[in-house]
Length: 297
Image 1 (cartoon, rainbow, N blue to C red):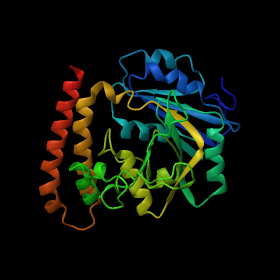
Image 2: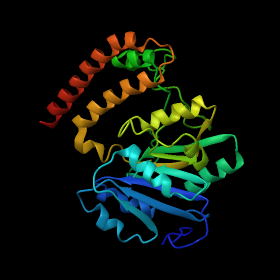
Image 3: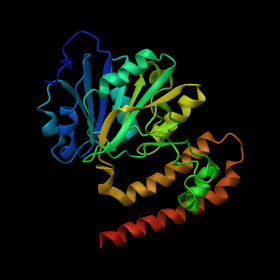
């Protein structure tokens, strides 16, 4: 059992709950769980979305982890909400199974929220899984109709440093310095449990993609601050689960994007913007799926 980890039967309330959602994560879940070390007591909750590989068999060896076994794949948002209902910690670490938490990272993230009561969440620096000296571009701005338009027609890639055309990807973000992060990836994100409960957890209208973006938007709209810490490092293998169903994920990405923009449009004219964005996103979606299939050949 890892240092600092609580047995499920321990009545002492932990400061930290680590929440992991798995789906066919057999290749990743053991290194992920083995990497969890902290000075403070913490609990581990794993929600398995009806894995068809031997994820559950591997989880059976981790008696300190509380496992919720779903009989169907309920999606990322609903599974996280399930796990959140079981969390006892003051802080909740939303963690993907395709990660390895480097030594000291958990303590550094908790320490930051302890020392900064005005911050609702904190994100580590994500690094490539096998080359932790390589930083992943894990922070973006929150999507708007205009930033998505520049992304769909490709101008954001031609002019990534433009504060207007490249607004979504934020290529200028300084990954070497701590600072506010509008929308960090929830591959690893530490959030105050009280904040998650106040916001009602994840919006299950975004079952797989964009529930994290929606959560970041709702935190920002509530005046809450999310911070980025470069000295807390987590190794991340990109898309370990979703790569197996790539065309489906591409379709879901664009459906959820339009759903997100419709939900958060404040101008009242999204029906007009959708005349351009919906067909444009459909074309880009089809091209990406076709390109993926050609590469597979």
